[in-house]
Length: 74
Image (cartoon, rainbow, N blue to C red):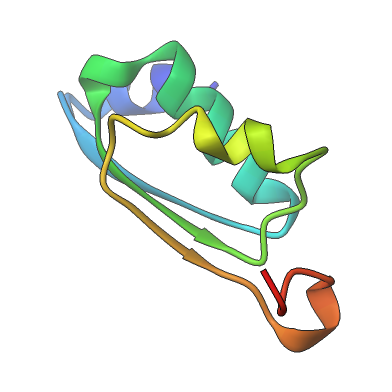
């Protein structure tokens, strides 16, 4: 759906931002449409494991977690 919105608006590339569960959507979009993704911003993403986020290694990524997200010590 996000790709359809970008196409409708004639936006060829975008910085994708996702918060919480939207972080997973942002990662999936960037993985599916790497040529349409400039960079990814993830704020407190809900992801199944660290490997899920590491799939963005070819994109500039800003990632933040809060103390209560369970990632603080990592």
